[in-house]
Length: 349
Image 1 (cartoon, one colour):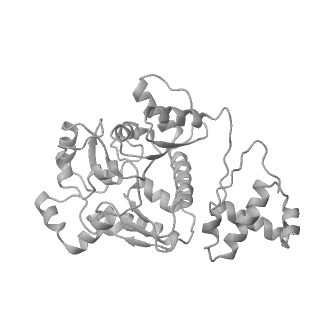
Image 2 (image 1 turned 45 degrees about the horizontal axis):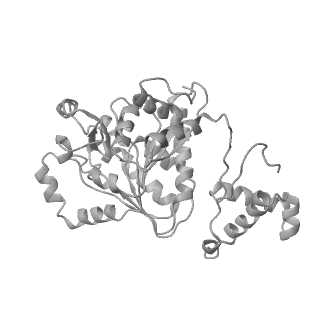
């Protein structure tokens, strides 16, 4: 199995102390084989002889190491446009750690979504650890990420829904519940659903509901999350946001938000071009978390695959609402162009 030319292959295997605690001998052996192959440059034949394995067994272990994220392959290309875009994003928003996903020329929105959600699913697979609690804001993007996850058992992981989803549409479609359940099944964890309306008719009803013990349990879990994962919503998205197509908002809501300068939302909590949410009326009825909690969270992950969301993403970055950003190169360039008002080099359009 020859190594690809011109590719840097850093081994992102687990630390030795963590490997020793893993019961699965296949994982331990996969790490051992990967180290010999990628770090020491041994051939599969040489590894087979050294470890007393068959050559097909060595090949299967290398495949296991790549598939489960023990090995991460990075292509270091001096002409790589996404790296330039990442540098521009870091320069403008130093607190953000961006990963810009490259795209084929003139790709469709479906391809863009597929590339970004596959990258995000792989990244999550390398970051999640046993006993972590992950907060998930549902939507089209996270639904696609949930379908791209590679199963990997992580004991005692928990996945908690960040905003309610109760509506006639979701009760019949299972859209939100299926997303959470896919995450839980992929990692052998537990899903905690949030069975309250996305938007309450009256803020007083929300306050009363928040006093219920079953709801308080979910709210407490949301406060204990080790990571929160979300996309941004926008009326200008190429694929309309689920919250805009699922019967959650009426024309009066949309008119009021436009008058209040709303450009996007995170977990159905709406914000303006500067990332501020204070004074946006509908947020008093929203089941989503206060955006100050997202802003202060040490591990907030935003995933975006749609240049139609550029203004919403720009506002989120302005408001400090993401620490990690996984985004396609076209959307990244569109966000940067909102800063400069001029074309930004990098990306394929």
